[in-house]
Image 1: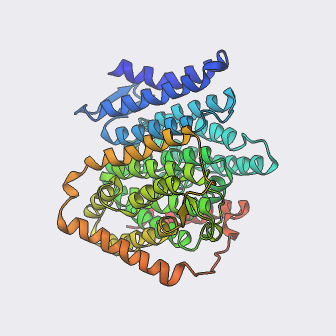
Image 2: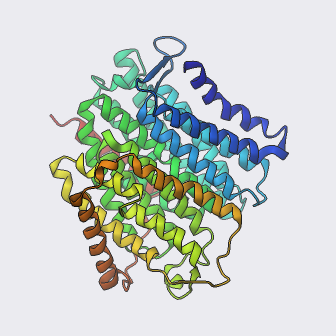
Image 3: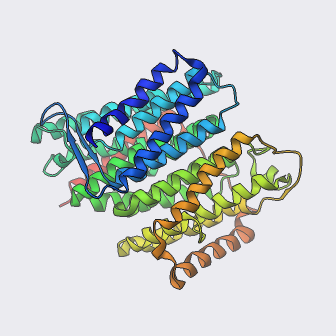
Length: 478
């Protein structure tokens, strides 16, 4: 298994650069790499004991592969494969598929890293690949959004690197376990960087512009898997060092409420999905021990929703309310929206029930409010008018991607089949019903537009400093 793991990590980088030598096979090679990850992630669920690899020496690279990794790796494989299928006949060049696969491989590396220095390398490669994908259209707007993404990311990673050095000074090791007993400032510096990379709480306000202004396939990658490279280390550290668990849970609740607070008022489809990504990352962090299952469900849903947004006749929800969309597209949109709202028979239901069962008492009210906000947000999609209009007809590539992602939502429903009892089914249905009622009575007619001032580049850098102060206060508390 050790040899297979190393080969699996190296494969995307090798194939990614090989695509330039045989560009006619770019799509096939890229899809093959993604499906290898799907197979590898599936096999990990059958492996009972975790695999630990120590490379170089005792102070070098540490890899840990377990069931938490399996959920994230499977998510990465399925979302990447769906994006490649979606782009099959789009005329994307070999450059696009090369960067997609390099991004895919680097994201996989994050999900098995157990030391801060190898995690740093993987996160930096992700930043470069994501920058190139965002800038792929080569328009002035896309280049600025990509540069903004790169600047914010690199600023955050400077904090991270200082924190990693402090961990090494304390333990002569970069292992995640080094946070136990490391100086509090090391924890604060590392966490502020991961909060930015993961789009967590106010540090995630870079995310809506980056995701909404990117092409839909890139938005699906960013929201489905890339933001989880900041979330995964937080989960791993919370599970390894019990003192960190309360901090992660606090940010989980705050993130869930912040994201949904913006999403319920947003009238742009892609911006609404981006804000809701922030909210859903909060659900992943709110219960670290079961965050992997929620991450899988969210990745599949958000990948599908961003791809669907790319074929809608408009991004403006007000226009869509008076412009019927193709019924088949609406069905795909409704299935994804039902899942993320927590409707039974889809994996979003089991993920929400499992998360709610693993909350500590002080989290319950906040997370229930966030679940209600989710139902309100996606009522905007569920109740869009639809009909057999000529608008919105799409190619086979779109449906292949939908079969993979929405089929995954149905299949993953069996991960937590114990959720199906009367009490568990009733509560989400009541929450969804209340959300729909609130949507029709209040939010459908709402004209409130929240300010975007905090999304400006200089404010994003300032928010990092404020979050660093907050983290210092939290970790220095007795």
